[in-house]
Length: 394
Ligand SMILES: CC(C)(COP(=O)(O)OP(=O)(O)OC[C@H]1O[C@@H](n2cnc3c(N)ncnc32)[C@H](O)[C@@H]1OP(=O)(O)O)[C@@H](O)C(=O)NCCC(=O)NCCS
Image 1 (spheres, rainbow, N blue to C red):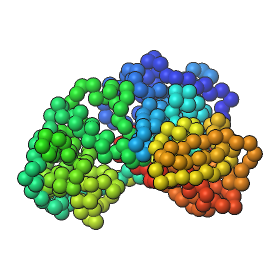
Image 2: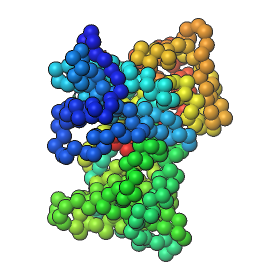
Image 3: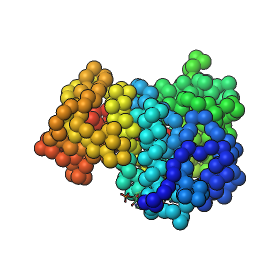
Image 4: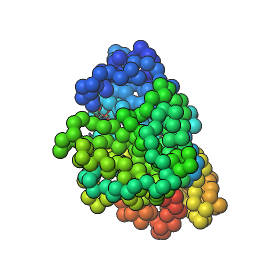
């Protein structure tokens, strides 16, 4: 690590240099987004500076919340990590993410997610792969063409409908794990104009209540390579999902390909012909606890999960997580309490991440060398909340 790398929050004066660094790292060709020129509420931008005061690294902490079994958990999601080519491999990212985690904890964050372009540096810093955001292509003509049931109304939405869309999104996601709540200053900032998120919004209503929606972008042309990109298609009843998918299928003659991100196990997925889906893009995401005590206490737990288990956790980057803990789960809630001696079960923070996010069973975590002890299965209690999934890219 260079003897002197100074990490601090970026100010408005640093934003031009930060944009240049990100532009080089990610090869941005498009126009500079307005949000990169101003201080944005709900995000903390970190920068690493060399001795001469030159910016050599940047990382952004997004003040998100994630749903974990019915409860909104404060998150420090990470984006835009970039280090100047000449400064790479010398601990700049490590220094920035160490500061970011400390700041996130002081701010009250409990968990963190990020989409890596390369997983290894984040693994070295305690994040572990927990899921994949899949974008798939379907033959539009393969979608079942149901007519809406007589009691359902299908219509185009307007900005006035966006609160109902947000409420339906919450109804679909809040009992899940890992999904963003899309609440808070950051989301308010980017939705302040009140515009529709894409080209179009299709709504299905039942007696005036929203029961399904799709937001979509039309794309170009009407030939064989024309694609309708559905940013989101969610429903809360099977009839509504069939009606919505019927409308999407009606694009077949002018947009032979339908592109969307299916949400595993939701109502729309039970209607789509997913057997013919081809992966268009796969975005791996990683998870990490920021503060294990909060991460356990702030989330919801299944009512049927019950028990206690002691374990010793190692987290070199966030030393406040290191120590011997007792996890007690009962009645839909859980807590971690510090206890004295080293426990028989010894868990690495990456193993904690895998279990908490439901990405692996304890036996697999042990096989990966991230959990040691005579009875690893006992730590399946930490994974009792089930699998996490993300629908937002950041
Ligand atoms: C990826 C990137 C941010 C890493 O920054 P860095 O300052 O070079 O990383 P560090 O030197 O702090 O390394 C941190 C750890 O990750 C490891 N690491 C870093 N880059 C790695 C790579 N490309 N492959 C494997 N391991 C890597 C280091 O060995 C180190 O582990 P250690 O401390 O246990 O030895 C930097 O290379 C970069 O800007 N790349 C281009 C843009 C990019 O890919 N950004 C990531 C977006 S998610």
